[in-house]
Image (tube, rainbow, N blue to C red; front, side, top):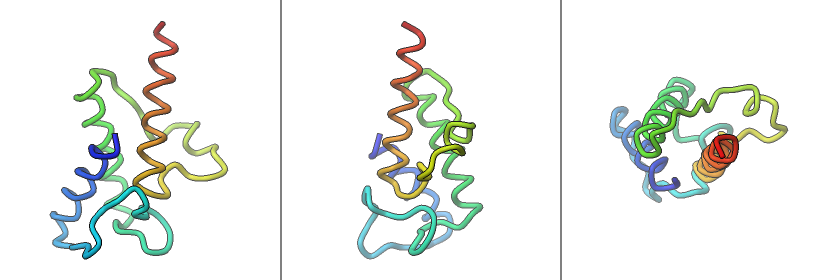
Length: 98
């Protein structure tokens, strides 16, 4: 999942011609200080990740739901926290279906 999200971030940065000298890692911030995408970029990233996950798993997911908004720590803090959150959603979906 981490690789999928890294690819999405790279694609968005390529659209803006923004380059990161250190590359994109799990610790790359998506919101707050040092973030690599602006608010429009974050929305674009969320939609792109939802689409890629749906293609990869054949299951639609929604990253902007009550669960995401009610967490005390945003799942959108870093590339890594977003990857963990996507994994949680997929796991919860599989558990509900079984």
